[in-house]
Image 1 (cartoon, rainbow, N blue to C red):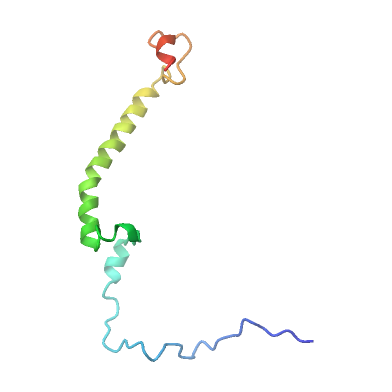
Image 2 (cartoon, rainbow, N blue to C red):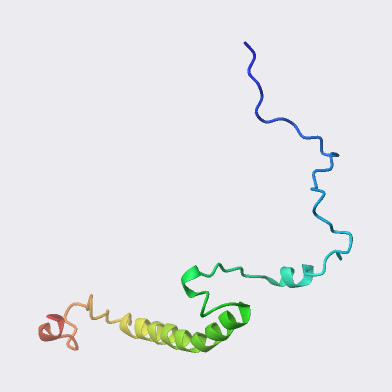
Length: 107
């Protein structure tokens, strides 16, 4: 008994465009430059669509939030750099480090 091939070969010259798609008035490469610069597509949760109905609303909110997030990120980096100095961090102090007492480690 012969098996039927479920993956039929499609003739590459065959027109597969649907008739309802009309690109007769389209211009090629209109968005190519912007796409080449990089585009981020984000799907907004339906729960917040009333607050962020369009790209402008999302961008305004992100532009307002970005400085806060940058400050947090920078302060974490500074804190991490300060804590991981050559004498060790408070979590893992260097043996005999006088700046760390057992009283401070009890939490």
